[in-house]
Every structure is written in C-alpha cells, then in structure tokens.
Image (cartoon, rainbow, N blue to C red; front, side, top):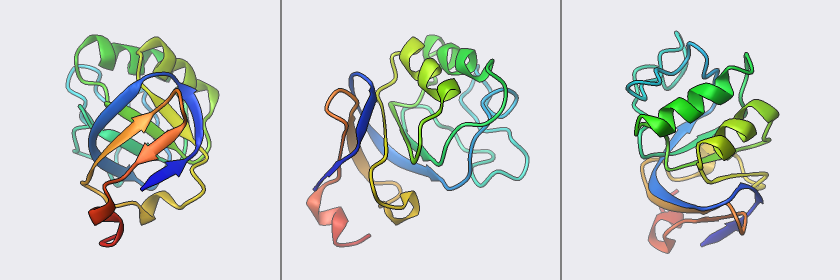
Length: 138
C-alpha cells in the first residue's frame, strides 16, 4: 500500500517503523553519539532510532535540534527516514542538512501504522510504502 503525503526532504529511506506518538526534542532528547532517545518520560525513552523510519507528531525545542539531527547523520546514528504529522522548521532543517528523507501530512494517525514493519519513505515523491500483508494486520 502506498500512502501519499507531502515530500519534505528528498531521498529514499527504508527501515523498521518506530512510532513515537509524542513530539520529540532532539536537543538533550536524543544522544547524537548513539541515537538513543534520552528525553525523560517520552514513549521512546531508551530506544535507538538508528536506521529506523522514525514517525512522530512534530519536533519541539531549540533550533539546535537541527544540528543534533545533522550530528546523528554524521555519526551514523540517524533514522533512515522521518515521518511527521506536521513538519516544523527545526526537524525540516535537520533532515535536509543530514540528508534524511522526510515526509509529513500522510492523512492517517501515526499510531495506526504497523510499528516494527519495514517500510519505505520517498521524500521526493512524498510517499510511504507499507507491505500489503502488513496493512491487513495493522
């Protein structure tokens, strides 16, 4: 199944879908050396975002969060792609600088997506591709 959204940062990323239903602050919320979510109380606290298709509502916090996304990419711990409900500047700039494919506005709640499933994000076309057998299980 292909879900149409809005392309934000070009490229294609593929990986296991990691869903964080809350906004994320990358400054002090994600370790740029390891890719581990550190934000206390966040649903993804303790999880590694490296190589995942990271889906979360939107970014929050300081503009330095853009540089944390870039550092994650430089250190080999960036997500393979990002899906937001609504992109905001901090995450967009970080995704572009870090060459992380990104989309938003997919028209379905992120929590309805099949967590853990290998999916593909095409930031140029603005699409999310979910294997058909996983759509029926979601």
